[in-house]
Amino acid sequence: MVLAEIYDGRSRTDAARFGGVGLQIVRDWVLAFNAKGPDGLLNRKAPGATPTLNDTQRLALAEIVEAGPLPAIHGVVRWRLMDLAQWVFEEFRLSISVQTLSRELRAMGFRKLSARPRHHAQDAEALETFKKNFRSPSAKSRQSKRQARP
Image (tube, rainbow, N blue to C red):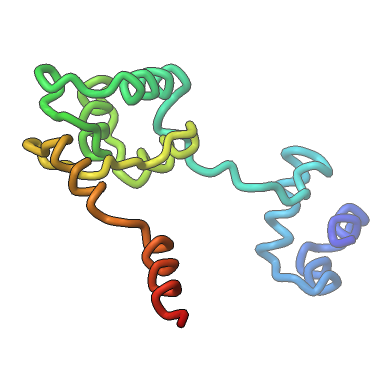
């Protein structure tokens, strides 16, 4: 309605007063309408920041994560986000934060997994023997119920 008032010959000040908005808003509306027509007045979602990694870089990152690190080449035995950020910098000369890299990996379907720690000198045979000496909790409770009955 405000733009119709302006196109009918009224001043922008009068049109702003008629529409109950400020003069700056009317000016912005006029510029948007003149640039793109009626579509310029529609509210749109902001485009946001451009992605740091492109599709080919994401593909290379996925391949390196799937393959895992080579200790002799990469200097690590498992990938951490900071190691991958360093690899991205060395490979593509892109500085990417750990948080952004985490978001990218999550969007590609990767999840943070960590193996359960195991001592390097753990004896598998001794472990099985140790497990066999313990009964399950349900077996213990059945035995205690039998002993409790007269």
